[in-house]
Image (cartoon, rainbow, N blue to C red; front, side, top):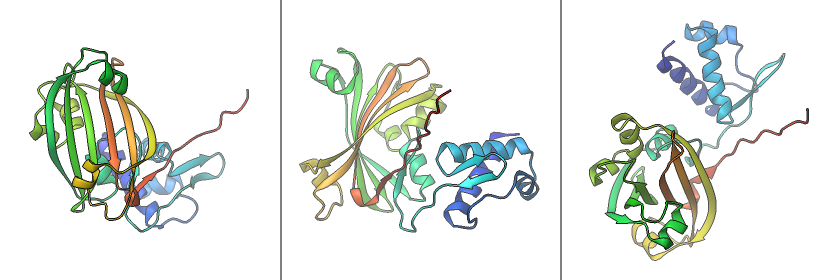
Length: 240
């Protein structure tokens, strides 16, 4: 079954969960296969993706339990390894990106210590302002490894770097490590973001690796705090 089929079912089920169309449990596999005209394997793939993102949990002998719902107010939910374009679409925001700084440089000892790139690495350094529904809510400070993100331009950076890396360069994006902090606003934050009287930001620092285990991106993403939410899914390991 084409991936587009199960992804469409996943999206419809996710929307139904958030709209509270289902109360405690999803319909049975039999009911869902009849509803969507597909195989059980397709339904299982869609449910597995919902489970990965913490929406549901399969309970043996009972069915698929709904775990979480969201408030009506729009917030940017951070989940999985995804581009800002993908995150905005998933959270139903319109997105516009503006590159305010773009240069090429070589990592010195101080930058290597900050980012994790080896000293002497050739990098792209850019800053991008993210407008969600017309409001300047995020500023990204990005460093990309030039050997992996080849021939990057400001024009590409205003669309989707991840789409360029995967679809044009043929690279696989596999793993992201993240650190979440709350930090005071800076002069740059105040200049470019619609912060009002807010004096701090939610900051997501990330290190992203390709299929070869090469660190190719270091990003500090600074978010207006009133529209930022992080949900984590953690499962307890049981003793054998």
